[in-house]
Amino acid sequence: FDHNKVTVVYVLGGPGAGKGTQCTKLSEDFDFCHLSAGDLLRAEQNRDGSQYGELIRTCIREGSIVPKEVTSKLLENAMAAEIQSRSGHRWPDGQGRFLIDGFPRKMDQALLFDEVVCPASLVIHFTTTEDVMLERLLERGKTSGREDDNIDSIRKRFRTYYEQTMPVIEHYSSLGKLEEIDSSKSIDTVYQETSVIIRKLLS
Ligand code: UP5
Ligand code: MG
Image (tube, rainbow, N blue to C red; front, side, top):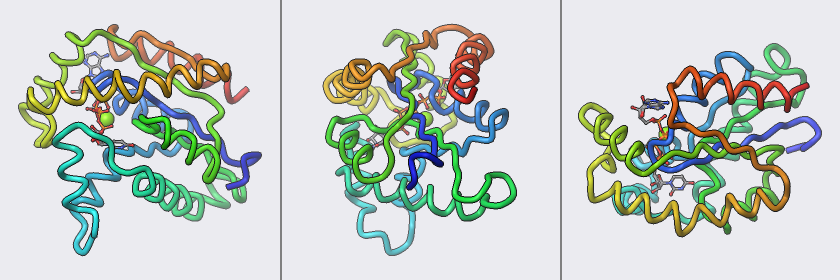
């Protein structure tokens, strides 16, 4: 993608921090396309004929990271499809704005995507406590049907976040691209703070 035309924002945060909730609201107000890496992986897992179904299922249940090539390719394909479908009406020719939710969550993914697909302009990190995240996920787990919304998988997801994703956050902080937002507060308060940052990026 042409970095001068395509804007990429990575949205990170622990499991249940509120990435998906905030991205959905932002994509309604700012004409961003919201791509959740986890949602793309779950769709691929359930796609007939996918060679990665079992691998993805195991990684998601274990809270571990699917090999970087798989996720990077799913994102790249989804971005290309979206640019094609919005081009000429919602987005001027070849342009695009993407919120990439829950990716990159490991250093090798970050380096690959920035180099091969498109570097991010900004990285938003939603921070809150483990207690808050746990409570949200257990509550959501009552109805979500997600195979990883159970206490065993949640513990493993927390661990992966500390061990693999925190180095990614530090990497973008050292590049001066990081904005941190406390997502312990209400959905609306978090959204207010997040939209200020997005407005600044687009101005
Ligand atoms: N909620 C949200 N905000 C709230 C607020 N401010 N106040 C009160 N409640 C709030 O929110 C979670 C719940 O909390 C919801 O019920 C919401 O209403 C409420 P949500 O917005 O869904 O949080 P989110 O951060 O998106 O949580 P999610 O569970 O999706 O995060 P994960 O990072 O764990 O999940 P993801 O889908 O990104 O990844 C799943 C798995 O896929 C990973 O564990 C991994 O195995 C795999 N994966 C890869 O291998 N590679 C990748 O690159 C990405 C994923
Ligand atoms: Mg999510």
